[in-house]
Length: 291
Image 1 (cartoon, one colour):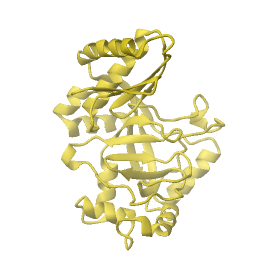
Image 2 (cartoon, rainbow, N blue to C red):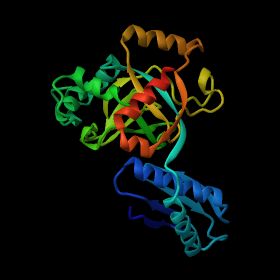
Image 3 (cartoon, rainbow, N blue to C red):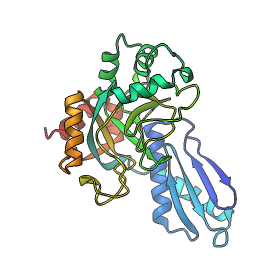
Image 4 (cartoon, helix red, strand yellow):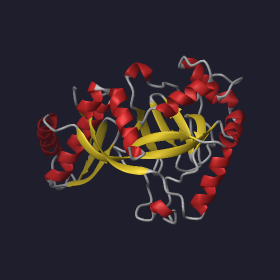
């Protein structure tokens, strides 16, 4: 990888490990950001990780830009030798695909879409070579997703599908952004999946909705009382298709404080994954369900 360093104003250094997202680039970026955080460089005030990059905020009164650049470049060499292993967790996220709420929204914004006569699921299935929406949903939910970044909107996860590049779902964003997207919409844009943590504008294709809150500033949700944001970089997500009855039941369980998403601590080794992608995914799913 050819790492690029760019200054943004007087207080920010942007480090880009790759122009394209990959798990290799994510681990390199993660290792470098961890190295900067643990090195205790004088003047560093904040580190913001992204998909295959990270940003360092520093105080120019405490450290000169040339010095921060030299320090970070030195950490790059150590990151090359770091083990691509992550202690993380896998979580099951229920999804009501083709739900009435995202369907109503997408129909209101068809003039902004590539194919106004169809739905987002119809479009995504067709351009990815699937014969039906059901086959597409099976592919979307059949393999796990890796959370490579959390942010842009509070608590929103960007997720990268853990399959061979040729099998990854690719769907462009809307031609023009929407002014409305239902809260907890499961969407997709480019190579990234996401879950809209709050209601608001958006441009990702809308596939369904989850009953599981992922951002709660009041911290009243049973599993969000310790931290208002559910996801963190490195989380692994397995989607589970559900119907309307299961969705309504899950919403009721959330409201009553008894919804408990299946979560398991796991060890993810990038080298093992690269050797046997499907086998690693099957092992992860087995761990999720206690097998």
